[in-house]
Amino acid sequence: MADFACKECHMILEESSCPRCPEAEISREWQGFVEILNPEKSSLAKEMGIKTPGRYALRVR
Ligand SMILES: [Zn+2]
Image (cartoon, rainbow, N blue to C red; front, side, top):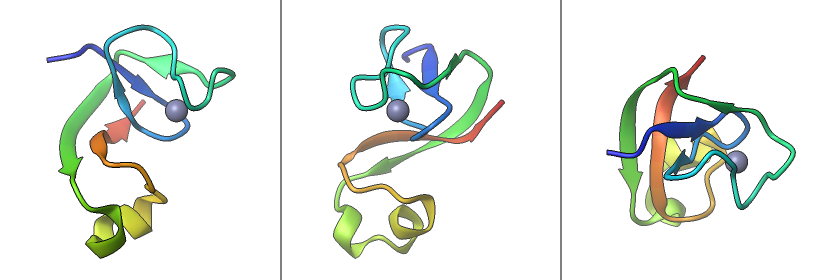
């Protein structure tokens, strides 16, 4: 499993920078994740503001 999560969009990353928010802070302290396959049909994705399919951390500290 990848180690990093973006504090801005919560995307789980394999490197220590987020391709979507290069300015955002990256954290190694995150818990749980969801795999969003179809953001348009997921209410959780809407709640979290997710528009791109992928894996997202539920909590990022
Ligand atoms: Zn990001």
